[in-house]
Amino acid sequence: MARIVMKFGGTSMAGLERIRAAAERVKREAEAGNEVAVVVSAMAGETDRLVNFCREAAPLHDSSEYDVVVSSGEQVTAGLLAIVLQSMGLQARSWLGWQMPLHTSPTHAAARIRGMATERVVESMQAGVIATIPGFQGLAETGRVTTLGRGGSDTSAVAVAAALKADRCDIYTDVDGVYTTDPRIVPRARKLEKITFEEMLELASVGAKVLQTRSVELAMKEKVKLRVLSSFRDAPGTDIVSEEEIGHLMEDQLITGIAYSRDEAEVTLTRVADKPGAVAAIFKPLAKHEVNVDMIIQNIADAEGRTDVTFTIARSEIPRVMEMLAAAREEIGYENLSYDDKVSKLSVVGVGMKSHTGVASTMFSALGERGINIASISTSEIKISVLIAEEYIELAVRVLHSAYGLDSPDVDETA
Ligand code: ASP
Ligand code: MG
Image (cartoon, rainbow, N blue to C red; front, side, top):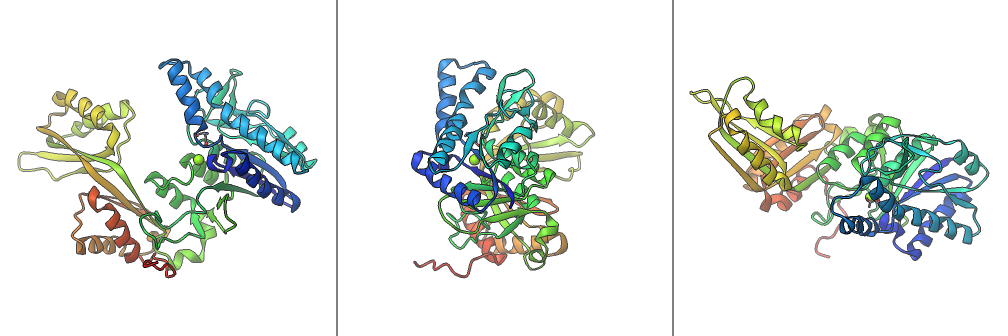
């Protein structure tokens, strides 16, 4: 017997037919003798609908009331799932965020989980009652309902699994696991049997959106055994594990996955004074306005002690950032300010990089042979990212997927 947390996303909760299918999966686990808690998302599209109601009601609305409205989507699915489970002859009851309670910070619409009272839930589960728990919502010490931020149900599931000391946390979603890259671009992408938390975080941060990043961070910190599975097909999913657990796979697998993000832009300031404080003056206003800066490159100073500084940001930040830097022109002392918003980022990720050399040179020669120019490069211990022209991104992903030997042998591309 094990104690497990199952989590179903919005597409798995979209309508009664799908809720019944999810309930069948829950039933299987319960009938195998497991204690089960199920964390659910709102029906797909429902949270957007609720958010829009708030916006229409008043563009600038009270965020504590926003939370009351948007948390209702999960209340509906948690209740419906309990009803469906009961109709199948199982015992089930829902536990809303404020009932358990699941404690959060009071930051409405972006609350952080602080902990969860487990005694009553555990008692009920031990008596054979399946717990259905709405994701995304909690209770602040102010006594008010909070929500965790969009996509927060994954994090709820991991927090519940950690608090209940569950043996594992199975995330059922509309993809059947984590792939070496986006299968829509590379038909030969392979489903990974295992991936480390660190790799998952690197891939998520560059656009592979299977799980909310926060949930992976929390699982890593709390040592929760995570698995991503399909709600629609019976197929083995992907285990997200610690580096120790990945063991032998690391030896022969250099690169685990390739992610990309189109939504990048590059900003360049020319002839910035090469003196202490000049670069700080560039990034100070950006930090103040919480602009996320990614790659930063500073060139060697010219004979007059001036240097070009280039950095990347999300494309949508361009208008704001151009304005901030124009305003700070005096202080920074640059000559020209420009941007390129037709760039994309590609990252190869793998813990195998720690113990192997040649990863970067494989990348540069593979891209070079195809005439793909690299605008900037950044690295971490397990990741190399390059910025290239947007038009080449799909080609680059395919080329590197082959170059690192990630192609699945059993896909017939002529089919
Ligand atoms: N329903 C919420 C959202 O759409 C939370 C979630 O599904 O993870 O953001
Ligand atoms: Mg989700």
